[in-house]
Length: 236
Image (cartoon, rainbow, N blue to C red; front, side, top):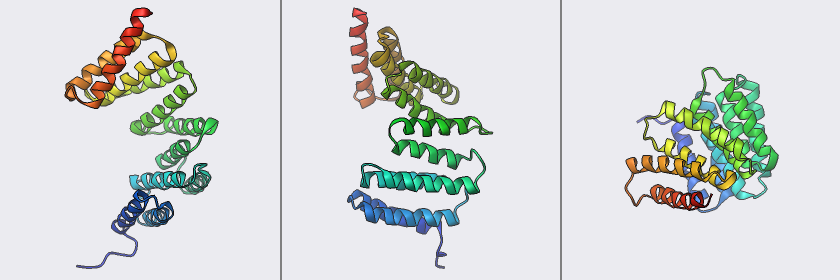
């Protein structure tokens, strides 16, 4: 059997696996050393479109975040990667938008929203569109709006997500159920629209029942939410 080249995706994966062991042990410094070596090797030997490049950049950034609560080095790492990507990749390339989303994930306050909005603007300019990455970005913006108490914006994002999911998935797909569940949460928690929360929970529950047994955690969770929404709806 011939030896692998010094720069090979299989070697890079092995480096990543070693890093995961150290991360599990909470030895983040050693984990980061292996993750950096993995990513550097993959940047040399994988095609620029390969999904591992974004996935492992995200993994490295979030390990930095675990190592230090303020996330300063995580932000610096991602910003340096973003600058490098902007110098070699076409504008609005999916790897650039993925890095913007990762920057949003490790940021706080207004910067978190700004990075997600930059990513969404880039995704909306992409031809052909990347619907799955766009859905991920919209979910994150919906969560930001929810955290800010902006129910109408959160509902708008979740409605867009739901409509897209209905178009690309079969009718009883659990991601449709989850989108309905999230709309119900916003209606209940932020808008006080308890009848609509009930309707969303009921539809979500029907889909979960079509996929899971009565003891599944998603079924139990939505049943509890439906019970609360029904109780509030009677008093509405």
